Amino acid sequence: MKIYYCVIAQIKIPGTYLVMKILIALLAIAGALSVPSVVFAEANWYGSLRAGVESSNGNIAVKDGESYWGIQGSTDAGESLAAVYQFEQNINIEDAGQPGGRLSYVGLSGAFGSLTVGRIWSASYNTVGVITDNSYHYGDSQTSYRHGHAISYAFSNDLMTLQIDAISSDDSPDEENDEENRRYNYKNDENNERYDFERVEFGLSLNVGDIGKVAVARIDNKHKRKLTHIVATIDKQDTIAAEVSVSDLRVYVGVQKHHRASRSNVLHGIADWKTKYFGFAGGLGDTGIDYVFQWRDTERNSHKPWILGLSKSLGEDVSINLEHANNDGDSANATRVTLRIDF
Image (tube, rainbow, N blue to C red; front, side, top):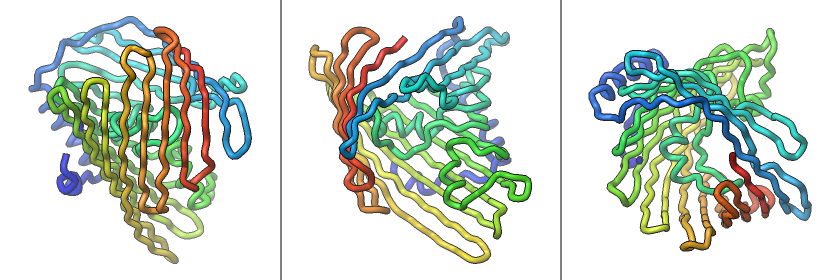
């Protein structure tokens, strides 16, 4: 579900005002396309409990594997529309804590697609990340995963998946912005408030018959902070990825182009770098064993980490996972065995 790098590099997504105009145009286009009828469902309670033991840097510790619980459903909103909702919360098996929320949104869904407001899976993950992010615990496609304070339009059918997100400003940064806060030593108080934040994501994936997918995504991130001096940062990230499936084997590749420009009254800087991905995943016949291998080459720090994972099904909703990450000096190598129970 994703196209040519020279093509994606031409995609320009400006401010939120224009994004809203794009959303309206997309609604009109999608309404003309053929999609299945809306299906109404009762609320569904679900979850996944994952915990195990990890060995890293000579230390052994009990680790949670991103366990969570959630509730999801839809109800009739009339005029062939469904009101949809989802709430999902992390659970820490290590100490029975609840470290934070994963998803929380409401929206409307129909023949035009869906329009949601809240904290959602990002456009870049739903198009590119689902191809290149296949490891159990380590490594990722460096797309975003989820973001809050978002309005999102999504449309999908047998041919394509399209999503565009616009993320608003907020005085209390969520987890997606923590890295920026640390980078600029940002403190959220009345004398040093953040006065603007804007992020737009676009993702498109296309099915290529029954053999695979092609996908593109763009992240356009703008920050402005009021510190001892004004700092503005622009981050752009373009990604293209492809996946080919043959029997039980899936092979995937991807390349990501990053651009960062920072300026203030004392410092200006521009950085450009690429990240490349390669991996394969599949199953071993009727054994119930799945495998995944992922390799990444990050130009910025010259690291080439790789990941190897195995999963054995112990029943319809139970599996045991083994994964090893060789981080090539970026961080300590790690090996983890995890029991996973879904409900």
